[in-house]
Length: 120
Image 1: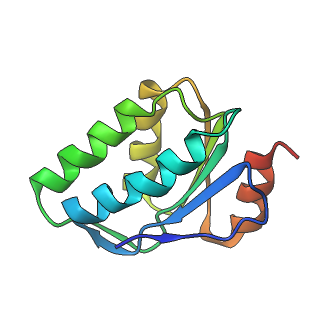
Image 2: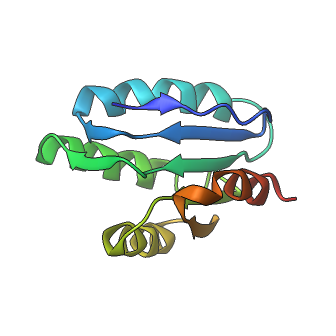
């Protein structure tokens, strides 16, 4: 499942991914991303993986990789919020796929993550 995070800034997209992501979740996520990406400028992205439990199957994981590579150069900054070695490893892997500046934040630092993406 995914939900949008209210960031109070039209230039910052916020997405939380609690639980397991299915292929259909990722396909639905693509809609709001494309809607914002059609506007001028490169937005920032806050991705909350605090309660992320993985994917419902290999096709979901491949869909996520496809989205990541399709939008590798669409964001100015990407903040990944979560904890643990897997989240840190995933952030480093994603950093290799994008030109966006990336940084990871602990769950208690959500406000700081949004501010960092905003460029403040």
